[in-house]
Length: 240
Image (tube, rainbow, N blue to C red; front, side, top):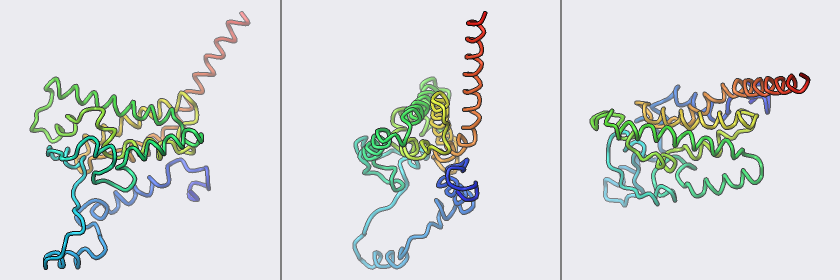
């Protein structure tokens, strides 16, 4: 925040900016085969010697869909959070509770949350339409995620978490009511677009939010200019 001039002056979400830097600067350490886990080597040797397994780690549901593999988790598992995933993004019921707290405390904008989800559903529905029209074959590497029911995108990955806790950042989001609808819709729309077409990492929420952070002032500018023009026209009509 200090780089941007202090608290309230940052044009990008600080947490997502740092995550983007780490992800692109150290991709193999973030999500590749060099992910460091304390004591993993020693524990692996103990397990090989007959010790009990502590837990099982595997790819996320998005990773399975991206590889056109079957998913063994039920919809209730996805909703309650009994699935692999990043900390904070798996339990949708807890995210919803947090969303209600942010909305009722007027810290987070319900317009941004709702419009983000609408944008995600719209993009998912378009991809479902592509599959239904047979415009893409099952052998395509994009088929798995395109074939995911449009509503299911909301209970897998981090789209709901991002919509509630990241997109609603009052400093970097749009400030006008109409701008919030546009801002949120584009975040959801672009998130699912990147989720499907990103060949290396089947998720795009943080990239979409950062992109729209950049365009939020522009959105507000044109919303305000539109309001000024409409008021000017009404004033001319009254004085005519």
